[in-house]
Image 1: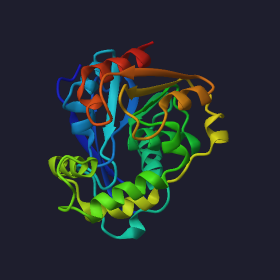
Image 2: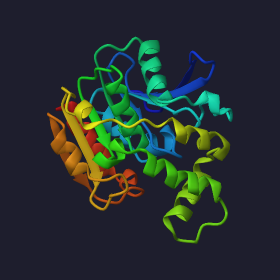
Image 3: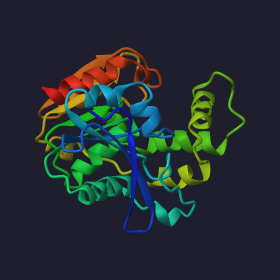
Length: 254
């Protein structure tokens, strides 16, 4: 197994350069892993060992930096963020890599994006939706409005508040508010009837104290082949614990 991630990129149809990182043997079965808002592949999947745990099970972890995040381009022009652009970028990466038999997963915004990819035609053998509940899929506006307030009020949030903590996290990842603000308008809701049509096994994974995006239990119950698993932590801390990577690796290797 490769011991350190390799970094690569491609250019989307609109000219935006999108980066991705890989860990695992090049010929191994691929799993596409999408990170959360304000984060990047390094922070979400690599730093705390999740990608290594997954690759150790014989899988090839492919971890893009979403548009406006990490090493990918982050244009300031709102025209660069049409509805569902993150899902389209994910589908473009699948086409670019020529993936046919693969798995797909994501955390928080990454989980929502993975769902949107399936809604738009992606057919992974297995799907992981982590840090995301049913309400966060049915009504994206509430969360996007929350993050708009954070980005528009940088430097004014009360110390220790959720908004202040999100701003602090943004600083650690070096996120660009001028790119992230227009991205928030690209989110698309996924209706219940679409979710009921998901035919693949789905792991719905959440921290025991994570209620940021609604009920993960309700999401698992709605999906025809949904399975809910809890790991320690809340929305911010669950991703720092090895339990998260082990749960995903166990599911994908089952």
